[in-house]
Picture 1 (cartoon, rainbow, N blue to C red):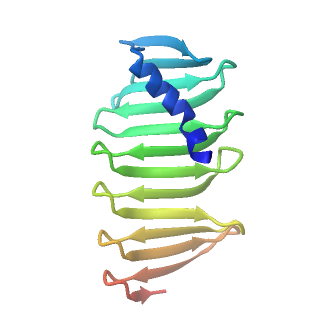
Picture 2 (picture 1 turned 120 degrees about the vertical axis):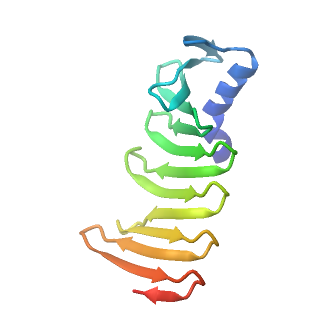
Length: 168
């Protein structure tokens, strides 16, 4: 059920597109109690921006199509706080995925991928308040591991390309 709830708003937007709800500069359509708005992109990098709100005006999802082919989708909870953000490269490969805490303001986890689909880095907020950062070589081996302590300071471990520990 968690998966289907995440994609409900984005699915409604796709459904609206399939029904032919389109816009040139700015338009608003209502589908099943949700408002679908497509508008021209903001700034030089955006091609178009699509937002979906519920009947009370609470933002449910936002999709930004960039001119270089990347697509960013932000999904929001019932109370309007951000639940996650997901971006894909122009070739359809995942680029970045960020999960947020209940407030929608603090990241709980983040993963970034290279354009070829290999994992580039990840960050995880641990229950003790520390943040664990990991960076990877293009061959998939761990390159660097850094733990940021909630009261300040950090610890580092660096690895060689073959996966053996180099420093830390």
